[in-house]
Image (cartoon, rainbow, N blue to C red):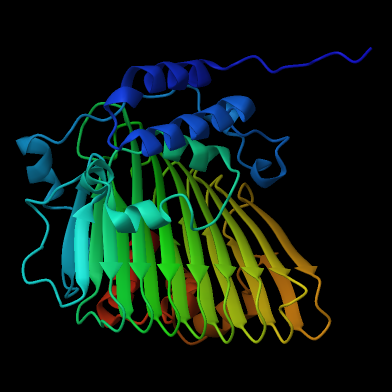
Length: 443
């Protein structure tokens, strides 16, 4: 007789259940949204927090790492809004339309919502859910069907976010800069959900930056659904500069149409525990997709990047390029899977992950995968882990460059290939400056 073995619920799981029971009736959305929330929380309850026995989470055991579930963040008061106004300073020179999420709430008073370009609509997710916005009703939770506990928890407790709709044929003159900031000094949890729909033939750029206090423990669970139409052009850049006590869980669900060009990049520059997961479906033909990322880690930072890319139609190309620099006792994980479906003939997909270890205590785990069901394809993956090349360092030192400066030049060159792929010149300059600042702090 087989025994029914069930894992005991952790204190965090119990607290999350209590939080959902207390707040779900007050969360925005009609009966359909409420049912969607309840179904998502039921899925979370069935699995609980992900742990090392869950393959996709084997390196980031939330059951062990998340000792407690923090109370939901309070809506921002005047003091929080004032502090949030100083956020995103490293992008101060970037010419962009600034949008703010403060403590998980869309801050219209801080955001630049005047004179929107023709075809551009921006609203808060909370108001869109409350009003039954047709764009949200058509896409929220429908971009990709993914069974993931962090995403299920986000769907259950999503409070606010931003809804961006770019109509067919529209082209945005300025990038959108979404500044998400935790602006309270007490421990709190934030659940934001955003949706960006770029219709056929449109062009848009979204830059995100996430920041929070250095001396406070807080938890962020954020998700973005990205729908890209045929012949559209989209760039999305994400920068994480969370505080050292932060846990940052992020999910991107993307669906891309015929002949679209998409570039997605992420730069992890802060946070105690960071998990970035991207699930994308290249659903059309002749798509050109570029996905990249950089992690600069020190101390006991833990960063986990999980990528699942589905090629479901023929004649598309994708390139994945990830770099990590690790110091102290930090740990970086890259899990990448490219799936090429039987119909997706003539797919060209290449994935590369490289890690640079600056300390004997640092750890890098790489798990690249290919799952190919078509026979006329060009696909490959690779990963490397190592230290700075002593010969290159000696070459620089032999020309009068001090040892630390030589190391800094080599590290900048290592991550520079990814930074150079960002289209916006101001963002490239900001990322280069942030890399230099990280190197100075390391010294």
